Structures are given as structure tokens and as C-alpha cells.
Length: 144
Image (tube, rainbow, N blue to C red; front, side, top):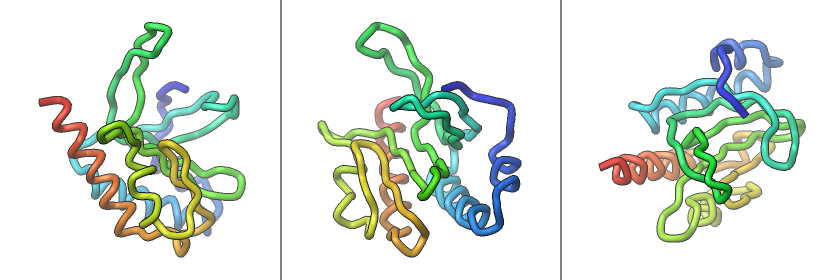
């Protein structure tokens, strides 16, 4: 995955109307929850080998187990074939925030750092916002 020049707004605008509405609402929610974070499009091969387009919010770098330094996003928003995914790459203690918040998020599927759902009615948007704000606070604390 790498950052690309396409703007997130252009990406959202290019979607079908019902998908555009959901992405626009989630984009606003995430920008509001992370007011001081930059955002951009990421494209390329994602975990599992699939081609993806993801709006990434916030930037950080880490060193992988193979000693390679990687640039990445704090929160990502993606449209999959049949659902939407929000990736929250933040850990408290030894647990990803998606694992900590999963019982409060509604009718969603969670992975280590992902929250996936078919439509906005399935996810508790207040809890999703709270989790994303929490990720932003963890990032600020780690930078201090």
C-alpha cells in the first residue's frame, strides 16, 4: 500500500449514490474525531493480498519484525465488495481498540484492528466515534 494523489473527496464522489452517502458520513465522523490529523488515499495490495483503496487518517511509522520501517495510517476507511471497514491501528495495553470496543459497536464483525458492517444502521456510531477519539488520544500520548 502507498499514498496516492487522488483526494478522498474525489474518491467518495466517484462512488454510487448509496455508497457515497455512507462513505461521506463516515469520512465526516472520522475527521471530526481526529481534528488535527491529515488524511489521504492509500492504494495497493492490502493484508491478504487484495487490491484496496483506503482513506487513511493520521500517519505514523513503525518497524516491522523484518526491521523494515513502514509508514501507515492511524485510522482507515474502506469500501469492500459487500461491506464497509474501519481500521483502527491503535493498541491500549496489549489489545487493539477494536477488540476492546467490539461488544459495544453493534451488529459488526471485528478483527484485531478492523470493524466491518453492511450499513450505518448496523454500527453504533457514537461508540465508533469514541473509539476513534481514543485512538487519537493514544497517539498524542505516545508522541509526547
